[in-house]
Image 1 (cartoon, helix red, strand yellow):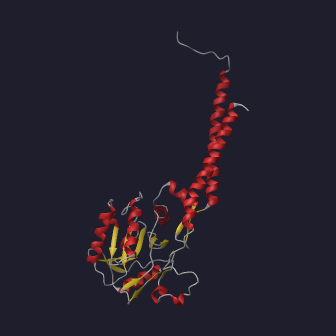
Image 2 (cartoon, rainbow, N blue to C red):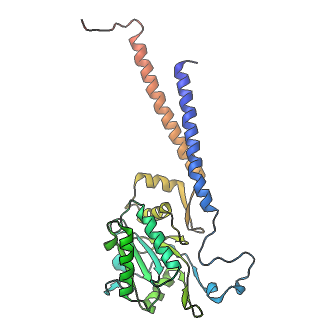
Image 3 (cartoon, one colour):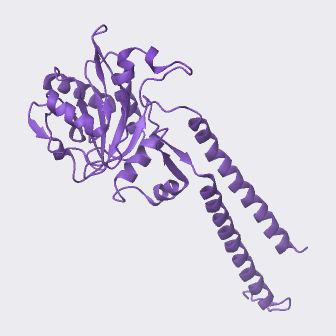
Length: 304
């Protein structure tokens, strides 16, 4: 076997190993994510009948209304106290929508913290690539409370665009009910604890107001959130790399996460391997032809 053939075999072995390792590397963390359970509401212990659960917990949940238009003509008040229509925050960019209440002692704070940390490591910009709309589902809350909450998270976010791209809304019960019902967000007031019982998650909505992706729980990975925003933008934002990754990852509505589609990834790795090998072989063949063309007795020129 000549040096050329040994080189080709070496390249095939190395590229194949790299491609296989890449598939395993990508698949591993995703497999770990997919072993979790979805959190459309509060989890119920296995084998425990729903009738034995506290009444508030039997009423709450997140029903996915994918592609169901939101009522964009619903009126709320922004953090400055102005009456606004929900549609004012749509039309150009995707919207990350979350239902929280600003005096929530537990889950809502974790939702806001997770959104802030995930968006903080993404290179998409709020107010340019997407908008963030927080809607309080407590009709007693005021624009002043919304303003305080916005100031707190804008200061924590420390990136440009938060002041103009983040919106914290309040509204009356009729507006809240209309929007939460359309979005599938079910919550109840728990009189004994004087708190709302509610599910947790965010909804990524298309520019024209249709829920595209639901991400459940209190932690939203930057990858999942970015994929959801890019998909909801309908091709308006994102890079070629995003499009390639979205071909490999598939949104699972049961888990509210993106999981790796193994066969698609294997195909892409295989195509990449063939292209690399083909490029290498072409370069080596051309180099050998040039060497053979000169021949062993080809004159060499040297300066005198």
